[in-house]
Structure formats: structure tokens, C-alpha cells
Image (cartoon, rainbow, N blue to C red; front, side, top):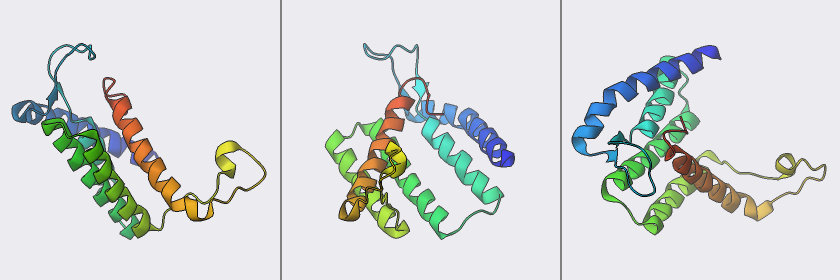
Length: 159
């Protein structure tokens, strides 16, 4: 388990160093403003580097299977959407719509769903979600994706 962490950490760090000059050259940077307190151009490459850390770790350890491949592809699509948004400033509605499409496809391809809420609220009664399990799962994944994106806006805290 420790090898996963160290390979991912090292790979992410190497990609941070490698992608910084490229991000500055192509304009994938954040500038200071009234709501942003950093100084100078900050490359917007943290999510890309984390993705490559996870990808390289799985490739190195030969841990690819159908489910992991689907997750990596859908994550890549979300990252491409984020890069496009950083470069061209997509409207929130469009970005959310595309995220919902990607996540919906992923949830159906992986047969992934939150079936009950007993562990979340630590209750002994199992509250089965039934037909609401898939919509709740999709909503939860999109919400979590955007929460990480918002956290990462605070000086790379997602990493």
C-alpha cells in the first residue's frame, strides 16, 4: 500500500515541475484579483498532475482492469472539461451539464450506486434508496467533483 502512495506522490511532483512552464506558455494560469490573494501567475495544473500520479501508479503496478479503465477515462474527460473551462471560461450551466453526462455514463457503465444511507448517518435502520439510488449517486459524484475543484482553488489544497 505504501508503494501506491510514494509512486503517486513522486509522479505528481515530477509532473508539477514539468507542466509549470507549459502552463505558463499556453496561458493555463490564474491571475490575482479582488477575490484571489495570490501573487503572480499561478499554473492551473494541480488536477492534471494528480490525475497523472494516479494513472502512472496504476500502469506501473499493472492494476488496470475494466472498471479502473472506465474511471480513468471518465476522470480524463472531467479534466479536459476543467482545462477547457480554465482557458475559455465556460458558463456554469454548460459545465454542470457536461459533468452530469460524464458521471451518468460512468455510473451506468460501472453499475455504481449508493443503495442506502445507513453508514452515512450511523443509523441502525437501513434506509434503502430504491429508484433514487442512481440519481443520488450521480448528484453526489458531481457535487464531490465540484467541491474538490472549489477546494483546489484555495492554493492547491486538493493535492
